[in-house]
Image (cartoon, rainbow, N blue to C red):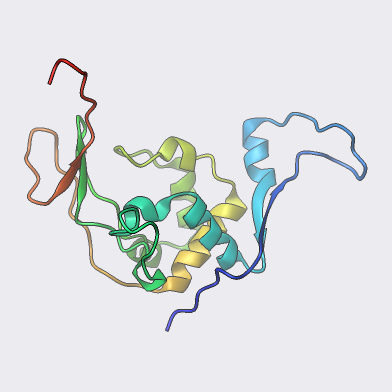
Length: 177
């Protein structure tokens, strides 16, 4: 039985001011800020859960999450989806993150989040900026859910029709429909 860690308080810390009683904060370089800003919670897993929720991970990686206003049992979170996202890049599928963390060490997870580039709609350009402490917290939370679900389909090239349902992500210009 999974236990929810939602009731634990979470605080976001932006440690960009040095010294007690600082009256002005110094601007930080982007990479430095990513290392200094992190979520503080009663446990790393609680911080990771907060990041998963706030980061919108469930929106794509949990079937029915958006359609049900987040009312999906936690034991069904992050199992990926058989519904693809189709656009000019082809069709991509939200990964089963619970299986992903089973195949990666925590260090490998951090490296993946910091360096991966892949097809849309995954916002890798934003995820690449996640600080190490938050990446580790997210890993620990997903790991705490345990393995579950199955593998999702491989990406489909743009010139092939997917054999699964998909969400069409192509802008329509009014008058050119």
